[in-house]
View 1 (cartoon, rainbow, N blue to C red):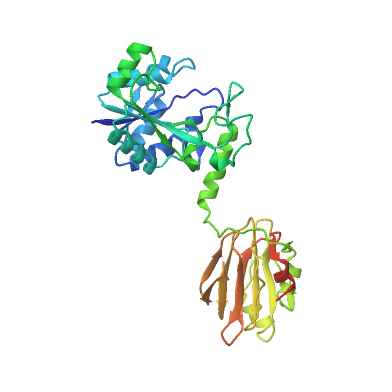
View 2 (cartoon, rainbow, N blue to C red; view 1 turned 30 degrees about the vertical axis):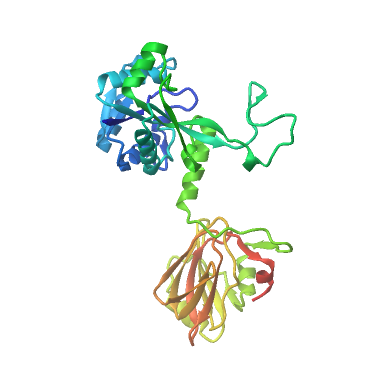
Length: 380
């Protein structure tokens, strides 16, 4: 069975201008599904199918094939049946796998599982679906519930299968037969039809501007490391504070110099020698609209209170001494010369350890919220 993968990508779009080449995560939307297909072990030859030469350029850059369809097959009136029949009449294949560029989160695992189920089960048409497990209506009539009975918990309802469309597969011989007999083959006609459930982000289909915004938010979320889930606790109150001087004082830093920032050149060694090593202190070196850098010196046993930053990453350079860094409940020993990166949302606490003063350069921004649990904000 020769499997060929087709990615249809026309230039025109009525709801989002040129959406298939609009950038998502710094690359054209169509690029995401191309990369998923290339990582698949079962996708076979991969074709980008379009009327526009710009997609030929994208195909060549990715080392895949290009099929140029007639412009009439890229009009708003042309159907999936039309351009798919044109393709299989001109490209030799037994099974046609179609991947939509508007489904950027489909994975190579989705593709391989879809094809494996289709081929092993002998389905002549395979349709990707998503399960919707909530009361559903068609033409104002209930589908999966009884209007005259109490509704069961949603997890007990029979799911309604909706087309996901991101992946479709057809036996080419049966596709032609259905087109000859019914003038349509997309839904499977009178052949054997299988349904493959897509889940999670793989079900995202970009049709409008709001869908693009959702996709961009998903990209940002996928780039962030997952943190341990937290739950509401009665009587637990969070306090946000962005006043750097008040924060440092609350951390036990007795002297805070914020008046000598933004000099063209400073020597950190001189600042350290001037402030000494017999009591805690801080000295802000940089305080601009884009970032800040503050030297913080503390004696063994001193440190900051456990907190997190909901929307800001920060990092620290250890200049002298040793510190114990607690990040999400895990202790880590940090010493001079090391850099520590704290990702937004992660609870952290640092304590000077060893037998001498420890000094760090904290790089962040002055207006960043420090969020504490109430007992940590008031405690030490």
